[in-house]
View (cartoon, rainbow, N blue to C red):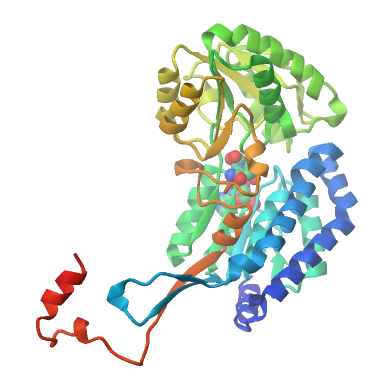
Length: 449
Ligand code: NAD
């Protein structure tokens, strides 16, 4: 790994990765390789996570194509040095900001969207002119190998390489001195990554998780709220970082919401064939333990060996139950109630800042209040999950749910250092700054007040 890093550093210093032309070519080559392997990617997602081909395209492959298209179209603008104003105190000089790549970057990705969450950051790294080492998750080993196949087919390893393996491999990589680390995964491992990065003062982007609430106010359009919560929660069997973790509903509309959610579970996820599986038996066992919390009002059956858990609704859950102490990351949806919006906001702010928050309300004052007072990474009003797919919206967490953002321009920024440079004239030299200038302080005070 050390050799690989050295190779990439040497390659980066040749300056090959810097031109617009080079970056665009690599993005195109990557896209063509994905097109070539599209069916294999879909099959692997089916095999390892039982994702339907519809989900595979909409949440993994299509979103990657869109990211390449969006970035390719705008890259030349983003790469241009930007001239900025210069104050009068610096008369004669001009000021510029030069976007430049960090150098060699490390991308560590999780298993839940094993293709998209390795590729999307890589697209940002390439667009910004970096070299990259990608370490996919060991829990989806076939996708990990497929990523290696695709990437080694398009890129030499001194430019982009995939290193496969588990925690030990990840830790060995983290010991090395990369120029930037982009990590997607759990909060606890995020802390390990940041501690390792601190040893070298390596900048990090941390895309983590948390307990993302779906708040349903008394004024909400209940039918659509139910449909959109069910869709976002049970997509990929709840193994989505921005899935609604729990429903927080006004007591007056709870029964109606539950009734509608049951209907939509049947409608949208009633077919075993097109519903995802839990990634491993161990992960399924952890989830099944939550089924003793509250009262099961829908679902609750499972087949551990098949890694299948029915979409489940749990009523009468309390904040002290185990299921409310950690991110669920599976197809179990606890339902809690509130009396006033103030109370709901306070409860949410008492928890760690979530990666996402969803508010269902027709009342503009309530919308405004929640937006102003609740702290969270990003989210939607009257929908779930879809904010992630707008490349104009930087995506990321805050506090324990993450550091930094990506997607679209934010991906370019995540892998870019903005180098500020002032170009001074040599035609004259304003003497004011020098201490031997008569009344220097008086003049400086006049200019800098
Ligand atoms: P994880 O943190 O267990 O693993 C992520 C990666 O870190 C894997 O590649 C793994 O090999 C590596 N890793 C694991 N333990 C490590 C250690 N001790 N030292 C160094 N590296 C280690 O996460 P996961 O289970 O793969 O994914 C689920 C978590 O990821 C959830 O919390 C979810 O919310 C979060 N997530 C966040 C986003 C986002 O965009 N914010 C997206 C997907 C998943």
